[in-house]
Every structure is written in structure tokens, then in C-alpha cells.
Length: 89
Image (cartoon, rainbow, N blue to C red; front, side, top):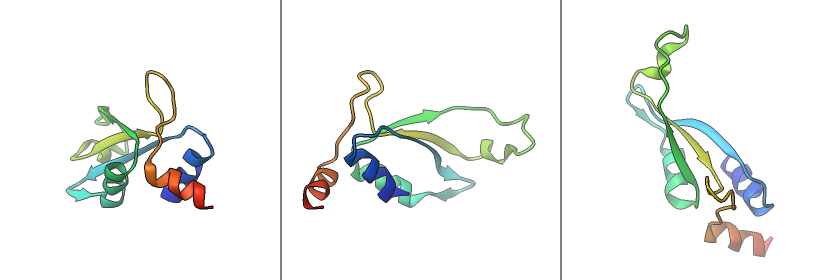
């Protein structure tokens, strides 16, 4: 999935990924590392799932929307490692 996100960025394609960084006491370390090492925007989503039949998301979850573009300008955010990779391919 992360390789696909890098590939989309190299090709100039905007993306949005909805996921969780924390859920029921567990940490999504792969996603957190990706966020820390790539030029992405993280939007923290605050939804209430209490009335849903699948309401496990609401308990101890941090839900995020990760995008590879600036929310205001809609311009693509570029990470140096992605650019270097694009040059060597």
C-alpha cells in the first residue's frame, strides 16, 4: 500500500487514505512511520460511531485521513525520498 502511495505521488496523482493510527490499545506503527517520513497531511477525524452496529471504531481509536496534497492549495506534497526514487527509476 505504501509503495502504491509513493507511486501515485511520483506520477502526480493525489490520494486520500482513511485509516487508524491507534485502535483498542494497538498502534499502527507502519502508518505512523510513513507519516513521519513522508510529506503528507494528516487530518484527524472525530466521528462518533456509538449508534453503529460495528461501533468498535469509537473505542480507543484515532482515525485519520492522510493526503499527499495541501488541503488549501491542492498542490501535491513531495518527499525528497520519493523524488530521488523517481529519478533513479
